Length: 384
Image 1 (cartoon, rainbow, N blue to C red):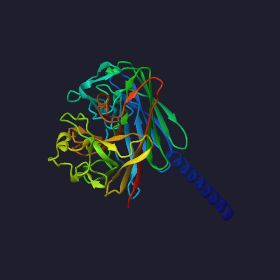
Image 2 (cartoon, rainbow, N blue to C red; image 1 turned 180 degrees about the horizontal axis):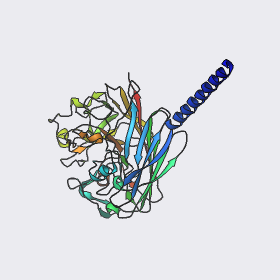
Image 3 (cartoon, rainbow, N blue to C red; image 1 turned 90 degrees about the horizontal axis):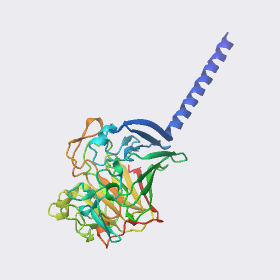
Image 4 (tube, rainbow, N blue to C red; image 1 turned 180 degrees about the vertical axis):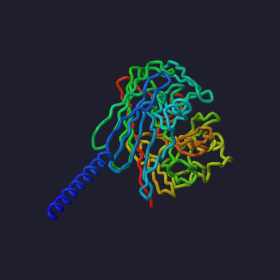
């Protein structure tokens, strides 16, 4: 009898161990990969999907086919706690109604084009104007408001490829532009974004991502205590409507000098500087010291309380640093929380604003037979 009880006990123990092993294996499988789920319907009845990428470390990135929006991105703090480090909404409906470009893919041209006009090869083009009489972020229906086609890319690092073809004349731009954007969640807790585009007519292209970051996690306070470094010795001054003057100005001796780690809030309200006054803080393009098309470190952000560090790498020649100056609490984000002024920062890698009208700026012209290619990486680590 005792022998039978002992055998039963051993069998139950073995079964328990097997169940535990199976559960552990299941949990391990859930850590990495790609999951697809329904995200809701657009006003016109089309459906949007949500893809969740997970890496082995437990980091997640959520992307919806509507606008290619990065809906959420988690990163660990110094205690290993994963929290969302972006601003966003709880539903697709909110993204379609009142989204100040949270997490969105931006195109055909990121940033501003003066008065919505430019001339290419002697032919004038008129774009949609949607910001102080200028064209901003692709217009009224830019890439942030279209439905992308998604293809999961399985592998050692989960990835999602999004494709969209902008028609000739869309928002006023010439040429049918075929665009491919791939989000890859890397093993080293980095989100890599690869952009690629081709055209059948000469056009202008400047693609970027407009994620609003707050490394405190949960975005319950502003980003003024975040410490920033930008590897840039010049920036692009603007006029009162935030259009470049054509000058490239040294950051030395100005509130725009982030060549050494500096608390963002230290000089953000220096209204004696006309550029700070125009931007209501920082809303400017920095010209990178290394403006080559090689992938290089261009910025670092440290949030002292959580210990989170974000390092930005890009092949682009510039970055737009924006400090959420136009958030005023009227936008209600996740869990009904109002997003207030300077509750986030954006580091939008790009070419310079208004380049089609600025002959001294690096060209943003894309011609048939050419391929537009850029890469940007947002890598997360901790400082204890």
